[in-house]
Length: 394
Image 1 (cartoon, helix red, strand yellow):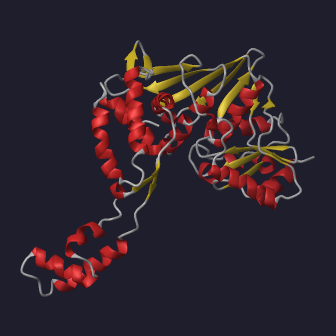
Image 2 (cartoon, rainbow, N blue to C red):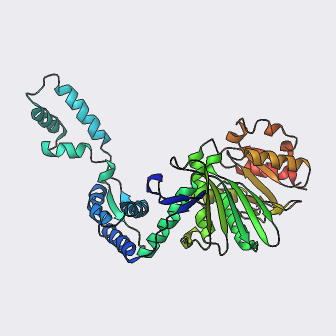
Image 3 (spheres, rainbow, N blue to C red):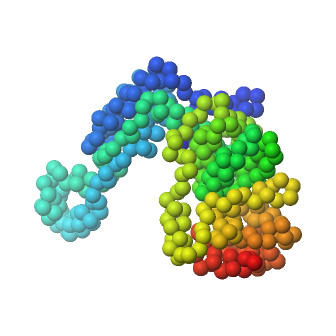
């Protein structure tokens, strides 16, 4: 996504308005020029390619647009990292220290003596010592996007960048499409975000706390929060309203409003995406709990009053909900609900980082935790899950 210095927006009447790119002839020509430049640079060094791209960027009426497009291209490129020169530098420093006991007449003589110790040509010594700097990485592959797709990705990345400063996000799904709701609920779980979800026959509403409302590891949480936007953009009918902190020149809360008519497009690869670490975890569970039924996308549970509980997975039909380091308020609410017994078979997993935090103090002493709860680090182990399921199973 785009960094803060590359965001293009306006502030007007309390609203945060993203300045989306249109597929005008000028913007398409700029995108095509950058795509062609990076595709033709296979095998070249990163620093040289970036320098050669400057004339293309400055041909645009807004250098900020060109820099944003190039940033997205660079993120999608694959580079071959140069071989480490750390050992060579260590040997060079050791040789230099020894030679300084009887120093040469000048710097050139000292450099030649060090190069001789290392078996290198003096002229090549400087480059060899720093051959592993990032700008010397060589391009292996560039994305096979079209110009219009690059512009669409830039618009999506712009809105994601603005969401990094959000305090909350309210998502509405008109018609309460069950398939769309299930897919978004799954995305929330994979991103380790918790939302208060309410559903009526005409509307489903998700209220999600944003990164600006999280004090602990807000940057990491904000990244997961912004990565939810592509999932929304693949939904047929949706609207989102975010309360954002204003930039320095425009203090005060601002509202960012997006919907299906904004024109955001997300690659199809976002639909149903499962992060690699979670896919590996589910595979391990399948191996260690062989013979048991593991459902990675169980149906939401409806509570009295219309609130939905979205489990992270189910084992033998027992739903399991995981609470991570940002979920203190939601954890307290869930334990109180379990104390009133509307969810007798729900297992509640609590990250140890959350359990030790001041916000969640005393949660593991809650009467409902002894029967329904388990502690885990990052992701729960198969044995702990099996034991917790056994406690709540009839």
